[in-house]
Image 1 (cartoon, one colour):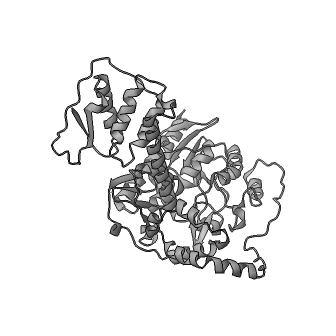
Image 2 (tube, one colour):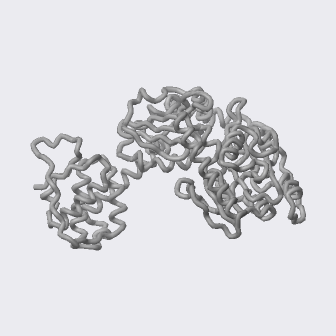
Image 3 (cartoon, one colour):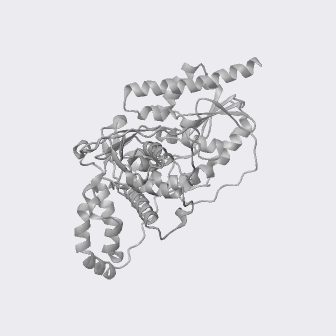
Length: 476
């Protein structure tokens, strides 16, 4: 009997190496006991893996590897044995994955389905609460997944909430996003997460206002939002009372006269002014002032166009104007602009010799009291505004374009471009070079002073690459 103890509950690499060694030595599934190193193995002690004969190998379908990577996240203890049994059988029956009536395959797909459902529930029912004040604030959530899905679910939150620092705490594993990467730590207790948030009363008011008793289907609602998740949802305290009075509320809604629509608070819709094609910045700025390519102009104070010399060798592209820029009508005049000015000076680049602009020219925000909270532009908004970046670049003809932040990188390259994988080196464009780095506002959001200093130095190092490139071009 072979006793295999994996390093942890989702040790896919450990399972893969053990399964390969066992299969190549023809160890049958019934002769293997699988466990995890921190579990009590009682009378059984882990055994050493058998040696693999040099050059011995075998192949399995890539589809099985994908299923196994997901199924191993299930909480059932028999998942390791099931995966090895399917692997063992695949060597003799390569078409096993296509047999829908096979008991092992049915069980494997059921595990995958459970994991994916749990991942979906985590995406839907995580509720962040703000912890701390001002720049030191962080958004923290408590969640209790059924399976080992924290690392599987984290990329969704990285994309959805990439512009705020957040932490998701669970009993087994915690995820912490600093605006650039996710760090995973050991599990936490529920008391480690904030129990309330000043905005929760607003959220409950909003939830009550959108609750439609006329369309209430209790069984369907409880299927999509099982009661096990209610205890962590701020709106949960309203659900039972709203259900109980749904019938009365529906009758009252039918009896009331239709209300008059409220007047729109947005700027009035006017057609986008038509301008002849221009090839100078003054004309482009005037044309962009009338841009109606997306809806952001309605709430913004004004278009914030680029600024700098007509033939600047470097074009810095940010993400979008912030609150200060929206009011001033100039790019990078707020706190992020101050960080940028200091970093440019430290890198040996004169600010007045670079052209500074943004991928999106209108401020996107949501109001929070008297504060206008920055919101990440969506892909349609980035695409709608890309014409202005392209026309600015055509006029400036820079030698180097520096994309600061994910939104800027998406605009410069025309597709989603991860910062971590692409920063630190020059990338070819059709008629120039490009450099990817973080946005200065990312540095302002870091809660830890050491991390802030470390990331600032990395930002300066990126800008030094730009300075070195220009020196080489001028020397040539």
